[in-house]
Length: 258
Image (cartoon, rainbow, N blue to C red; front, side, top):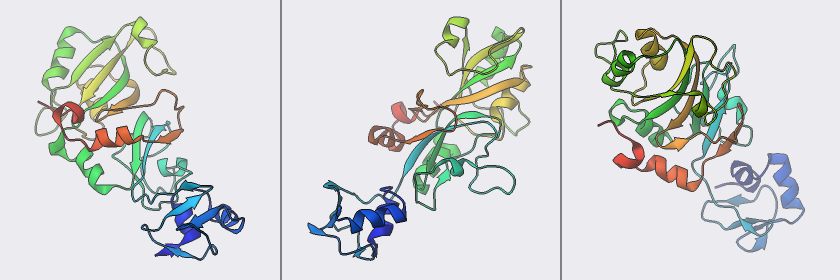
């Protein structure tokens, strides 16, 4: 059992002080009767309503964040701002980023408190596809593309798994998230999809074929695509359809390596 004000705050109905005001003003009902006070105890089995709308218990929360540069993918850091500091509407204390993006990398990052789902997305044997928009030095030739698509040596015991590469022309650049640097002279852009998550993997792969990364942004993960309406630093909750897609382990949805 938990206090009613804490329950409502955990369900993102407002801060503890805000929901206390809701309760005292008669806007909250429990099992059809007006709430007796903020200290009233409830369970997930009780029917709690705010302004006539049922407040369902939510064990897990799922957020899509457009991670900006300069923020670290960690729950705590002594020197840098963390991605969790950007999630301001969740009272869940146990949320964490699913995986990580480098400090200077932007784009899609999932935030949740669902440890089982995080394991499904990150476990090496699951091979969930991740797609990135990349701006690099120089222009990739057919040989470099072929190397990436077959697997390259980045100093590990094995070559990387085969990637998917799509070089972008200027027309296509209008259809991808805005790159603050835009391709300059002797620079080019591509979409790169990989199904592993080694340390600095994208940067190491492009460096291995002679094209250092200048800008990197993750566009999708496991079938979930970054919402183009989210500016860097903004976030939203995942829809039920997106959550279901993440949890579906079929080959078509999860995008396993073949």
